[in-house]
Length: 147
Ligand SMILES: [Zn+2]
Image 1 (tube, protein in one colour):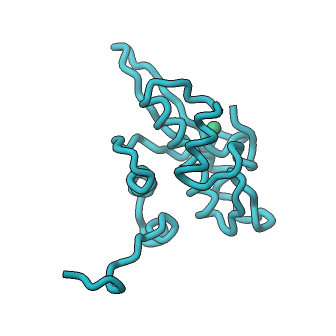
Image 2 (image 1 turned 180 degrees about the vertical axis):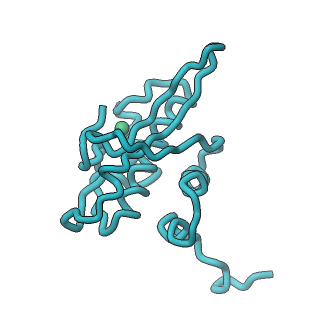
């Protein structure tokens, strides 16, 4: 039995990323820590997103099945020359990994609401969830714009 003080601390997503963890694992960790029992979804880096840092999309395939996906902007999120700290979701981020973490959290809220079958836009419910689950004080990215 582990003595209290000897338990492994919860690994932050930033650390997981630094250790070679994938975005999918990072999303899985976020979902678990938020207490949301949801399957992970595809997360892809997009070279063509120049205006918004992250996007949650659902697309219908030819058989009428909806597929959720999160897209992250390579041009905006791989930039390392931002003036630091950057405000993202109303929180100060001190490095690119923290920005990616905040954006993922934000997009996963859209995903959660979509799964719940409710309006998954920037509603009051979104705002409450963002605050309760992640401590976000804002529902805008601060980096780029988001539709
Ligand atoms: Zn959003």
